[in-house]
Length: 184
Length: 61
Image 1 (cartoon, rainbow over the protein chains, first blue to last red):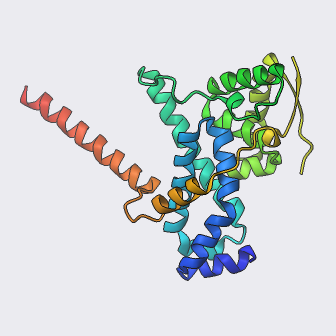
Image 2 (image 1 turned 90 degrees about the horizontal axis):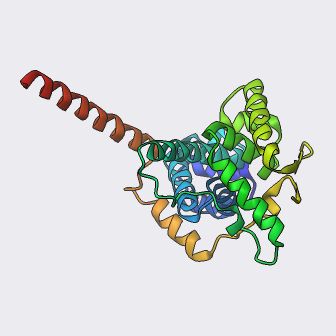
Image 3 (image 1 turned 135 degrees about the vertical axis):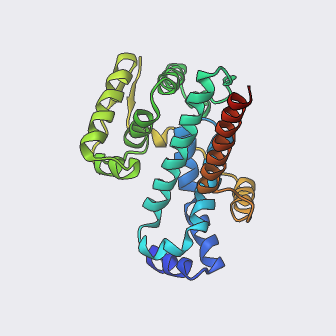
């Protein structure tokens, strides 16, 4: 069923449409949340918060024909709030390392040790970035979003998105070599 | 050092289990599930109470 039909039925409070939207996009939002947050517990909370908010705001769904983009935008906002919270916890010494970004744990076990080591290092570098840079970088280099999409999901201007991406990529390049994604 | 090819999502793909799908759905549709608006309201209320308590403590000293 198309997003246009689903969003119309969602706006009418149709419970079947709510579950259909959830089933259609939960896998995509889970993948995005897991790659951004770097741990399963927080990724699950981001997915829950995203759909919880989407269900509460279902009446506005008819204005959002692109359900996927809308849900990604909501998930990005929740991820950002969690990153900000992590920063505060870290600042006051309450973070016991359970929020560490462990990319190497998410990859298939068959991958070679060098790649696993690079991904481990990447997780550490991402952990030290500010939430804005980290999210922008993840959207561009992990999810393959265009710079326009990064700006839209982050709720900033194109110039700001480019600047954040440039600064984040400069930090990453010091530690590893990552090929620039081709624009969608 | 190996060269990583962006986008990395194919390398970092982890499917969600049916158990998780059902659990998240139950929690998300619960009327008690706090949305970020509720959480922000709670935080603002907590901050107001703290400021009020601090001012009261200063005045009563």
